[in-house]
Image 1: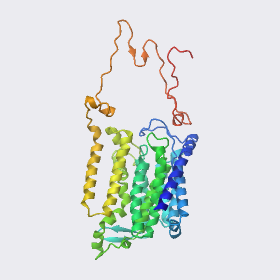
Image 2: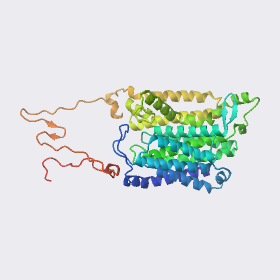
Image 3: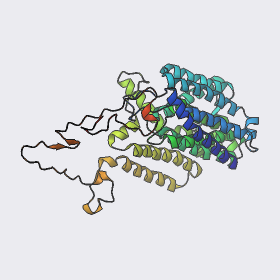
Image 4: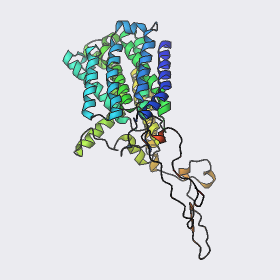
Length: 446
């Protein structure tokens, strides 16, 4: 565990320290696209945060290769090299997209090629545990198709959910934490060496997200862009493939009697073997709903809109930060609820706890629909949105005089303030600068 924690800390430190210079590089190179109709931020923000995350991945793998307990992962398995090859390719395409806005079909093709590169180096699904049937071995063609499909779906699910500050990095970090606990349990509890690569990938993925989150929380100073979202999506998919398709369920020694009876008895263990599909359940649901919604309207499935789940939370009335926290809550509930059920499937307290937390989540989700007003004596301790509105005082004027406005006397004719236009270097994204060109009062000398 200490080696995994050291790898996580090194990855997080390298990612955190490099994000600042990467932000300056993105501003200098003009990697700051104009604000689109579906965006929720108010001013251009640099992208290319995936550059820092990729170098954090390289640092984590380099440190792990020189540790005594984790060095054997690189000697006995080719999966870390396969991951690095696929990650480098998808990261390069993401960097080009953040700068030049590549076509969606080009990115889709790059995702499939990256998955193919990993398959060619041995990171592929070999068999699947199917409840009611048992362990089913896959042919090379079936394994390749299933691996490519899982990689593409996971990458696009993470990319679709990357719409609010800190949302994608936080949700993937929660998913990686749940996945790390499950993979570590297989590796340490059942002494399954084949689970070590997936455990390492999850630890590095947590470090990448934790190192980037301080720069990406609302208000974000930099976005990860497609170079970051596609990268962490691919690593999450690689962890899933390593556990689901490489670890033989027969090694768990849970089978008694016939194969069908043993499969039903080991059902709680089979569920977490498909844990990646549960920990990204919310992004995957958002992806499916987006495809259905856009196809129903006669649009391309890749056409951008403002119908994602996080956009709907903002429309309901949640603030930016609260919408992100709600998405965090549901991701953690699904991921860790599934993990807890896999460990103690016979405990009813886990099911009751998940049901109770789901009820609390629904209340928090619908809270803006119910806006109670606090009594007078409690208005000083509640947020402003729950206070009673006080009527604005109307200033009395003498007959024959012009009324004063909020900005000053009407007769003075104060000049209107003109917003500063964003230059090619993104002046408003560098720091706290004046938002208006002229703050002089009317009548002052120039």
